Each structure stands twice: as C-alpha cells, then as structure tokens.
Amino acid sequence: MVLGRSGSGKTILTLRFVLDHLKSRTPAEPVPVIFSIGAWDPTVVTLRDWLTERLTRDHPGTAARGPGRVSLAAALVDSGRVLPVLDGFDEVADGLRRPALEALNATTLPLVLTSRPAEYAAAVEETDVLTSAAPIELTDLTLDDLDHYLPRTTRKTDRADPAAGAWDSVLKKLREPSPDGTAAPLATVLSTPLMVALARTVYSDTPDRDPASLLDTERFPTAQRLEAHLLDDFLPTVYPPRPRPGSGDWDPDRARRWLGYLAHHLTELKTPDLAWWRLGNGLRDSTRTLVTALLTGLVIGLVDGVVAAAFGSPLVGSLLDGTVVGLLSGFLFGLVHWLTYTVTGKDVAPSAVRLRIRGRTGATTWTAGPRLLIGTLGGALFGFAYGFAVGLIRAYAGQDGLSSALHLGFVDAIVFGLVFGGGAGLTFCLLGLLETPLDIVSAVSPRSVLNADRATVITQLAVWAPAFGLTVGLGAGLVVHLLQGYLGLLPPDTTADLMLGTISGLGGALGYTLTLTAWGQWCLLSRLWLPLTGRLPWAVAAFLDDAYRRGVLRQAGAVYQFRHARLQSHLAEAHRRG
Image (cartoon, rainbow, N blue to C red; front, side):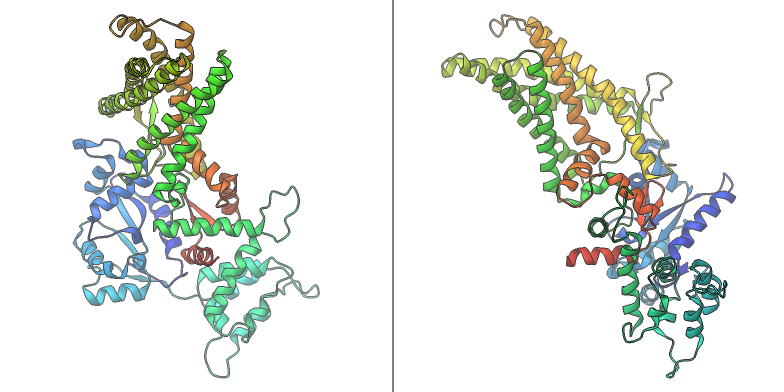
C-alpha cells in the first residue's frame, strides 16, 4: 500500500517498481502490470473480470484463446501470472471506495495499491485496512532536497561567482523564519516532485524568468495560487510564444486548445491512457457512427464513379452509379459499425491478428464460420438493394412501364444479392481462416502499434480486394449463366463483370478498412474529422510525439499519458471553461 499526496510521485514509483521487478523476476513469478483503478466499479464487475477486461482492452493480443476456451487474459489472471499494480485508489468514486476495498481484501492475488492518504483513510473508517499489506508513505521534499536539486538545473546569474545560480537566493530566503512561524507558500508548493518539476521547467532555463518572483506573497498569497500559476505557465513555457519559421514549433494557443481537448477526452472516458485508436471515442456515439457512414459512403462513391468512367461509362451514368453505391455502402457499413462497436460498447482496437498461410495454429479458425454468416447476410442486403436500384434506373432509361420496371428491379436484385452475398461471405471467411494471433503486448511506443496495425490492415486489404473483386466479377458471370431462362433473358457482359469486380474489390476493401479497423477509424476520425472541426491538428501523430518530447505527455507502452493527473484535470477544466 503506497500512500502519498497529489504530486508526491506515486505513479512514478509504480513505474520504477514495475521496471525494476521485471529485471529481477524469475520465470515462475507473476508479471507486474499497471492498471488505473479509478475506472473500476466493484458493484458491477468483479476484480477478476475487470482485470481481464482491461488486459484485453490495453493489450489486444491477450484476447486470443487460451487454455480451457477462455481468453489468454482470463487465463493469466486466474493462474496468478499477473501482479496487479493498481494506481489511483483515490480516483475511485466516493461511494465505491468501500466495496472496492472490501473486494481487494477478498482477493488472494498479491497486489500494489496507491492512493492519497485522506481518501484511503475515509474508506478504512467504513470497512477495514488492506489486510496484511505493507504500508509505504511518501514524505514531502525538504529544503535540503531542493538544495541538492534545483541549483543544478538552472543557469548561472553572476559572472563573478560561477557557482551562483538563480535559485540560490530563493532557497536562502526560504530558510529564513517567517514572522508568524508558518511556512512560506513557496516552501509548501515545492514539497512535491510535481511542482518542483514544473518550477524547474518554467524558471530554470528561461532567461526572462526570475524564480524570486515566486516569493511575492501579495501576488501569490496561498499555495493554491502558486500551484495554479505553475500549471498555467507550464504550456506557454514549453511552447514558445513566437515559434521560429520552419522550426516545426506549434502555435501555443492552438497547442493549448488541442491538449485541452485531449485532457477533456480522457476525463470523459475516465482513464489516463491516451490511446490513438480511442481518439474518436470522444465524439458522441451517434456522431461517430454518422461521420463513419457519410465519409465511407463518400469515399466508395468517388471510387465507383472514377472507375466506372475509366471503363468508358457515360459521365452521367458514372455519377449516378457512384451516388447509388455511395449511399448504400455508407448506410450498410455504418450499420455494421454501429452493430459491431456502438451497440456492444467495444473499442475499435488495433488488429490482434496477422495473416499466415503456412505454419498456422488452429486457435482462431472458429472465427471463419461467424464471418461467413455475417459477410453473406451483409453482402446480400447490399446486393439486393443495389440491384433493385440499378434495375429501376435501367427501366427508367428504357422508358419501361411500372410493371416492367419492378420486374427488372427484382431480377437485378436477385442477381446482385447472390453475387455480393457469396462474394462477401467467402472473403470474410477467407480472412478468418488465414488469421493467427499477433502479440502486440510488448509494444514499445504508440507509434510502433500504429505502424504495426497499418501493416496488418494493408496485408488484409491485399487479400480482401482481389479476393472480393474476383469473386464478384466471376460470380456475376456464373450467376447469369445459372439463372439464364429462370429470370428471363440475362445477356452476359464480360466488360460489365470486369468493371463490377474492380469496383467491388476496391470499394469493399475501403469500406472494411474505414469502418472495421483501428487504423481506418484513425484515418477517418483522428486524421480527418477531428482536425476538420478544429479539435486536433492535421498531423496528430507528430503533435503527440512532439508533446512527449516537450515533457507534456509521457509514454506508457502503447499509450500516452499526461505527465500528471493534476495537469490533465487542469487542462480539462480550462477546456470546459473555454
């Protein structure tokens, strides 16, 4: 049990513990994994199920089947191979701390728990201490600690005395007794590592800043005012107010607005983990689904129109076909996205699979059957609607009557329903048969996970586009041949079949990518919609990498985090006020 007030270094201590334990552990010992416990509701989900859920969400490779037909994450937790490092007990909702502490006492798992003292003490008064836990309390920094640190971080201010620094006079002043015997606000503020780090950033390396101004009790009468000042001045310090042209610096006002949105996004999701594949989750479910459907339909419609024109179709016909295909595919893929993720509450996580033809295990072949059913139904629905629309358009162009138009519409609906149903079902099934788990648990950075997921998606598309295109193109000729006479005269058209296969392969691959993969959703929402609406910059990945280098964010495996929860909450509050 690690206790310490806000900014005392609890999270950094857990990180150091995990890294040091990984170096010294034996293969028989559990692997320490950090969990942000503030998102746990012990009245709804057990600790075991919550740990399993978080492992699966944060490390998608653990979703693969393990022993006993359970997920690998569940098997790891049940067998005691995971050492939970539960950070932020104080972030659990007030009414949930008592049942949370009772659940932690009931588990047999060894664990590490961090909390601020007041919140933990309040929970203990209602139930009991964390039984048999070894308590550690982080103490405040002293003036001696500051003497050993701050003077080493600052510029020299006196050429006559090379040892003199900007902090020397400040630290000397803090040692002087105050008239009323109370500690100076600055001494109170500099008792936590967080505030010392902020003070160093704002005052140690900036020639136009003098740390002596922090001693002004009229300007900063309380420790709270000083802390707010350091938090306010942190971003303007790390983002210069006048970026040099061509230096790659970001406009400070925009950077603050973007970071405020990200902080608000994490606060709404109740997590400190800034994952690139969950950036779109900051939008309302209805907005995310609608944007996905509209943009997917627009992309597929444009591809359809361009390819049709390239095959020599009249301009009006290409535009009309592109419009019909765009509307139908946008609706269908949006519906699939909504049913797959919005209704179930699941994240569009990075792909946990790779494609392998030889040397496969049989662990994931069970997905082929459901994929065959889903693909067939979805493809048949699209094909029926598209065929009926095409039939009506053809009847209208030929100035046929209503009866003939309906007959032609239903004939085309049956033909295209069979073609697209069979093509989508077989292609989905093929992807399921070729998939095998890909371990991304040991990801070293968010960028590496993004690159790996992009490579996986491109590999999937290399299978999807030609497989679906060939199946639809060849299937169209086969269906016309088999139904010849049963549905009337169905003239074969090799050029039309080739065009249909090309458009279907490209359109289907794009629809699958944009709606059902993490990388596609990243491109659609984080790289297009959120920048278009001003919430994020166009170069999102570069901005996040730059914020990490400036010390605003830190990396925790596959995700970013704000360097401290205080900074995140401060930026989120400023974003809400703005």
